[in-house]
Length: 190
Ligand SMILES: [Zn+2]
Image (cartoon, rainbow, N blue to C red; front, side):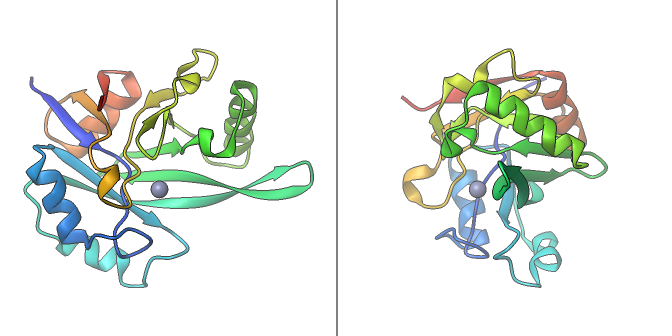
C-alpha cells in the first residue's frame, strides 16, 4: 500500500479562510496531496454548507468536516475549545485542536480531553501543531489521544507546513481507522 498524504484541517471563504473551496482543493491537488478535509468554523458557515460540500469536484479524496466550538468550564468561566470533526462515510474522527493556542499544559490537555469526553464527545486525536507549526509538547505519551499534525490552513503561508501520511487504502473510513490505529507518520516543512 502506498502512503497517502493529507491535511485534516482547513478553512475556506465559507468561514475565515481566504481561498474559495475550489481554490483550496486546487492548492492541495497541485501539491500532490491525496486527501483533504474542509473544516470550516461551525459558527461562521452558511446554511448551504452541508449541501454545497458534496457538489465540489475534487481529484483528491475530500472529507467533509467542521470545526466545533466546544464549551468547556474553566474555573466557572466558559471557554471555547475548537474540536475538529472529520466525517468519513460511516466513521468520524474527532480532534482536540491546537492546545498550544490555549497555552494548555500536558496535564491541562489531559483534563480538557477528559471533560469533553464526560460531556459526551469521545475524542480520537490531538493536534501537535498550531496552524501548521510543530508543538512537540503535545506528543507526550501521557495524553491518551493519537497525535496528528495539520495545517489549519487559512491563507497562503499555511499550506503544506504539516501533514499526515497514512498507510491505508484510498477510502475515507479506512483512513480514519488507520489514524485511530496509529498507522501513520507525520511530516513538517523545514
Ligand atoms: Zn481551524
